[in-house]
Amino acid sequence: MSERITLGSGNLYYKEFTGEIPENETIETEQNRLGYISGGATLEYKPTYYEAKDDLGVVVKTILTEEEVILKSGIMTFNGKTLEVLCETGRVTEDSSKHIRTVKIGGPGNANGKSYIIHFVHKDPVDGDIRITIVGKNQAGFSLAFAKDKETVIDAEFKALPQDSEGTLIKYQEFDSTITE
Image (cartoon, rainbow, N blue to C red; front, side, top):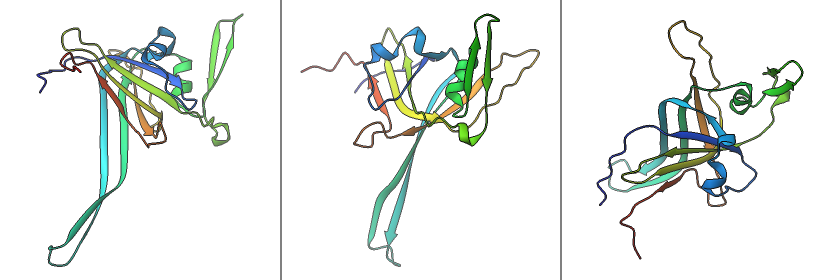
């Protein structure tokens, strides 16, 4: 068994999901960085079970009925294009002559239906890197708090959708030097 101790945060990337997840190197580029994060990232897996049993508790059958996966992270560096990823009704226009980016948010008729590959990378030069990949969208909304003595951080919650025909919700990859043939 590995003696891995995981310390620290990581990097958060995104890419529009078009039906297939590309190789890590394709996702892990500056162009695909969602933003630098604050407060780390949290992956939550919540199974739901149905249990059928007789009145005496002698016969019991339990089955998994559904699963929910949410990846949470605080995004500290962002711009209007980030808001477009975090909000399904976000629309971005840019005026290059005035150097103005405008984001319009709202109106259910403006929902773009896009899902994104959300890819978190925890770099560990000692024990090896960990990567978590889900496909989903931010379903928690967002708030922007502009305080005089604290950075503005957007708390995003990406709810996972199946990423393949097997119903996979999480792709977890870790480097482990003890893996041999």
